[in-house]
Image 1 (spheres, rainbow, N blue to C red):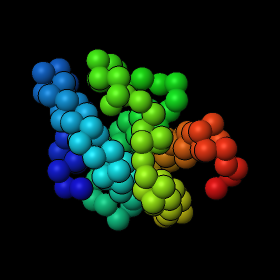
Image 2: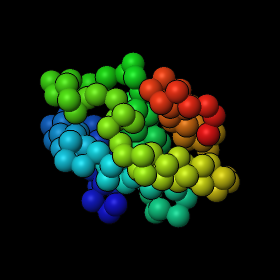
Image 3: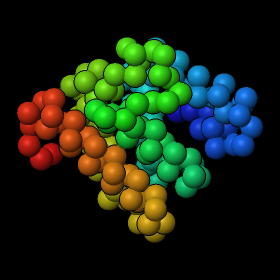
Image 4: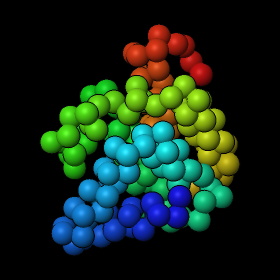
Length: 140
């Protein structure tokens, strides 16, 4: 988990060269082990993880876009396999763990700014949409 926070911090910076390099690192992590990538991203959201609200917000947005059936990761357009719906590439065990951690995050978000909570809720909605579209499952 610790290796991801500096990458997300760099993506938040203004320097395009550094940001593109950090986005490439993130895509490499996603390609190497989709399960680990998804879990680390969702752990970044948890209140016990020592991350800024900006990093949490970015993690929620990136993970939502990776799970979305319609959004395309603009930083990884060339690699079609790595840009496929992340939710479909996860193991059943990982999917369950992501759902549990996301619900724990929302239950413990407490005094978070509304915009960050909204982004985490949007991630939950996107997961539900992927479940319904690809797994033919109801509400979790």
